Amino acid sequence: MIIVLLPLGHFLLAALCLAWQSGTRVLTLLSLLVDASLVGLLFSAFSQGETLAIVLGGWEKGIGIELADDRFSLVFCILALLLGGSVVVYLWKERLRPYFYMLLHLLLGSVFALLFARDLFNIYVIMELLTLVSFLLVGYERKPYQIWAGLKYLLLASLGMGMYLFGVAIIYYHTGTLNLSILTTQLIGQQNASWLLIASSLLVSGIAIKAGIFIFSLWLPAAHASATPAVSALLSGMVIKMGVVVLLRLAPVFPLSLPLEVLSAVTGLLGIIYAIYTYDLKRMLAFHTLSQIGYLILGIGIGSELEIAGSLEYAVGHGLFKGLLFLAAGAAVQATGKEDIPGLIAKRSQIPVATRVGLLIGTMGIMGLPPLAGFCGKTLLSNGTDSPVIQAILVLLSIGTVISFAKLLPLFRLERGPSSPWPKTVAYVILGLPMVLFLPLTRLFLPIEQWRESFGTIPFLESLLMVGVGLLLYRFLPKRLANLPQRIFRLEEAILVILSGFFLIYLLSVLG
Amino acid sequence: MNFINGVTIAIVLFGIGLLGLILRRDLVIKLLSLGLVNGSVILCLVSLNAQPDGVPPIVRGPGGAPYVDPLPQALVLSAIVINFAILALALVFVMLLVERYHTTDSQRIEHEIEEEEGP
Image (cartoon, rainbow over all chains, first blue to last red; front, side):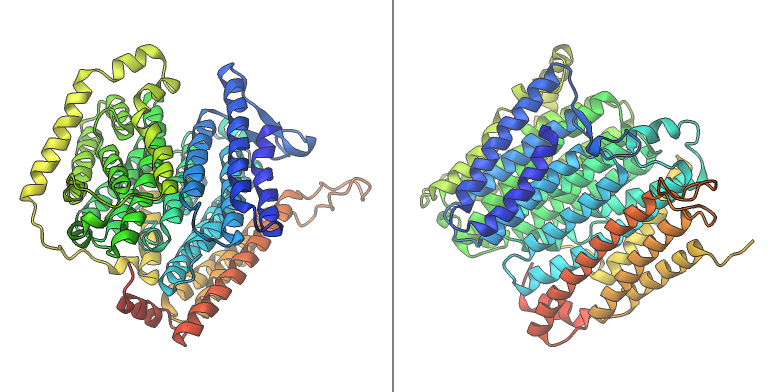
């Protein structure tokens, strides 16, 4: 019952927001509180070993649409609530049209719906809904560059969902079902059928366009950098993760291990290289979204229990610190009027203290300093694998992250600054507090012995060493702007790159 | 073996739509090509699962022959509605861009936006 109520309630509230214009802020905040208690109920049922599953309309499992909850959906529900709450508080004093809150409710509703979906076609519909809503959110201020970024996003994402639906058609023709759990049993023994390889690479490339993987999501830097800070925080923290959730659902069913591992290396390293040489703060954060997705799909690609737990933790951690970074970056840009990092550093005395602290906590989290959120996920991911190649990729990713965020360090001198308005401070606290308390919270994901094993002194020292090496390398790195190709982010070139990415995935799944 | 069936036509249309998206600079034509791509997917979904000698899946209908699977039609219906919504919204935003730049040429719009400023 609750898992139907969560998405549906938000869709109803979206309509209510338009009808009752004056009270939308309060209504939204109250609805988030109600959601929190509902998710709490789900969580207590889940911890007693009950998983709630419901097939809509009273049909049998193979015919009706199945909704179910599990560990992943609950964890991402909590992330969505935290991000949604902080965004509502962050925007408390700004005069927004009720239209914005309507979109926010639609976004939350479709996020919840996706988390409980267990059906290929249901996932398609909800992904399209997410595309539409986030397109409208990107273009909320109606500035030309926002509209163009949103339009590019809409075209590419719609093309991607076309590819996804092609894959769904092939799968339905061969198996006669769309339910993921039934598919799992039907596909045993056919993992190398040629139709399955084509279908799964179509599905994955379609989702990859939405999931923030470098060679596919070429719309992302423009869209996330040009949207308003609150929208960027939602998109980068939550909507991108929804693509990752779909990959997480598809990975056990289809033969995807090798493609996902290679994609994670590609997106991680390319994202880092672009981030190091980008000096526009929000654009750099957007490139970092691309690179950090590498961690998430690496764990999904390997697929062992510990790796998935690592991915999950890193996903939550990334949602928290990327949301915090985007919110604080938006406030900093607003306070100084500068968007590039050197300009911000020059005017750093105008940035409120709370904003600087928020940026600092976010930076420490993304660098993986213990015991903040990023550290836990990274440690679990590197503990879960013995392969030297994957270890090397993880080390490169961590060091690259430190290098690209080292640019921000001069912002954090101890200086007096103007005080921050209270809603923004509260929003930073909502996202920052769980990050600081993350290490104890990871006990929820792991059994106690494994938790003790995973977080000893050695990972602490390792991650400190990684940060040290990164800061040292930043000193010796050539500071000039390397000429990285920016053409691939144009619409036409992006489509070509996506097509070649599709062939890459197909090739890899044939090899795997 | 009959090579001209729904699936091959769908694949060809998908290719034409992709070429349109890549090669044509006019935004409206790009949107039409996107419509073609999505239409071809729908054609593929319907024709892959077609049963020419089946009977309608109605309980009181004529018996004997196997029932047609109603699910693809239901899926296609939602897909068509979604594609309509996407095209309509995209057209609205193309209109906003045209009002501002007085052109539908995507490369000129992109160029002007890069000139203006903007991340």
